[in-house]
Image (cartoon, rainbow, N blue to C red; front, side, top):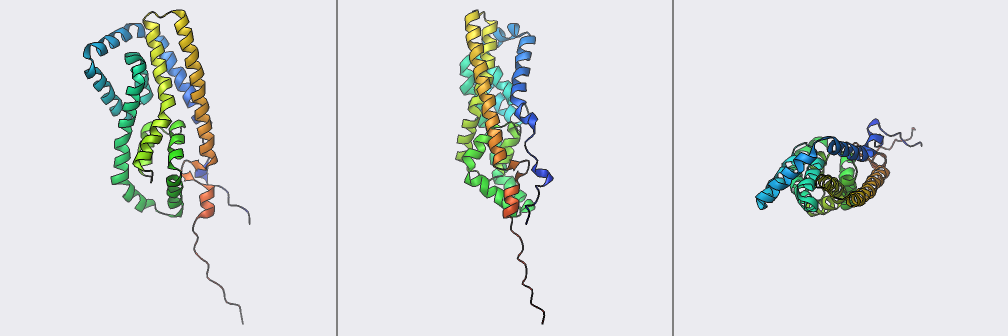
Length: 256
């Protein structure tokens, strides 16, 4: 018996998802090159120094708001690098993780049960079990893969059976490379405006380029693994269709 053809919803991850990271890096780099950062960065860093802990709290809270709302969180990591230098990395990670918690908890405790009642079925239950059994790897790959915006990922994972501590651990691991790349861009922009030597800029730029290529490679590997696992727009498609529960057929009595 031939295998059933995949449904239209089970289309593979589009090519533009793979190139989203490099395009984003280029856009941010061009923005930093064209805009008057030389005037803004000293003002920003002076404000941070003069406000001390208050400036740190404001940045982290602003990052949390940006993550909860559908706004580009990557830009906040760049601002963190501009304002705090390398200290922007742990602060950006803290803001990202804190901002990822409320959507997940709301989705888990208030929205998951009514949603599951509406869409319950063999495919949905099988997808939920598959994610729960491989939750750490699944969340890390999802964070590394630019398939969905970060905010949408937080809500989506709240609808799954991923455990909260697994969610936090995998989110931290999955966000670490990309956040470091964004903060590095901000740090390089800060160096360029405070009169760093050409050797410093070349060394930092070369390191950023190498690390950016590694982040892009990680994203492509994660995309390939997600596609290999069968996770497309609506979750595992072909394997779950084969394992779907079908009604038992009644035995037919032979004719006399």
